[in-house]
Length: 433
Image (spheres, rainbow, N blue to C red):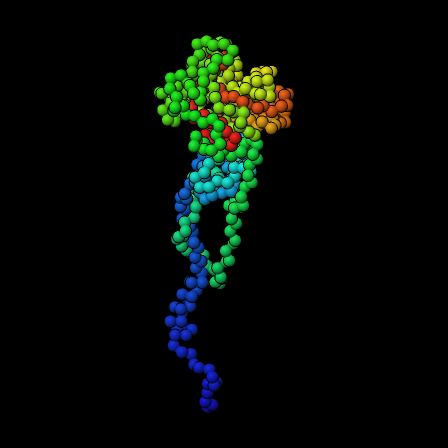
């Protein structure tokens, strides 16, 4: 019988290789490992709020205006887009200090070029006007740059692993992560606002330089005197101007006007400062509080002599329940006193302090007016006639040149009111509230 000899270089099977119990155990473990796919599923965590929105409305049957204050609670941004859901039947017809559009039931407001940069904690104000039916509710789903204001759910930085027991035919390398797109705004700076008018307010208190008039009436007592003088244009009646120590916006004093009804109750406190030195734009700011809603008939609360209109008064007051500008020389009003024009103005809230600001360009027909830093679109003059707003006002092409400034009350009917003025400032730079 021929003897079998192993081929040189090939070893006989050793213990523990295929065929042995140890080999079968190792093969089973390898197969099991190959069929396991580890998937990381992040736990939801509550992220920090990114913004805060204060929303107030002024509404009447079928119409409304809304004031919105956006506060950035997250990192600084150089532009912003705020979105929310409208109530059923709610429409937006125009806006100011932001570009507002509507798609379906979702409204979107995007910053203007001059108010896009918001540091952490900084605010931006804008407003809009519209119509409604059925009901007008306060939005609750605000989102800033696509992120819910309350932060919404976000992935946790420490995900917990879960195991997918579906077998895989063969192990494969982990996929390359998809690139993440950063949707945060570009850090490039926003352009500066146009200086005439509507520049960003830069001053607020009497310590600020460049203010020609700045008074909280703290140096006054009894009847206004010194820097403020009581005047009664045309004729005098029972109206009074006094310094009040019981009601004030700041400090302990304010100017109180008891404005009586009928023509001869005109009464004002006039500054002795030279307002004609303020140029090229006259910026004014005052805090106002009054007790009686603006009437349907014409009333005046603030007057300024216009040297380019024969010394006739440029007036701020009310008519048809809303704020208006009026020219004494031709009785032109801003806005025009049509239902559409009046709807673009706003009433003066009662029984609370309101910040009233205005800007008058002395180089061109351009004016703006704000309540609590929200521009009133019906009180804007921009040089281009707008029906129901400034078409009547622009029939006179010469820009006004205020030379005096008076706070008080004029009624051309039987309407009366009690008004307080405080923290009054006029100057050549924008003045904040």
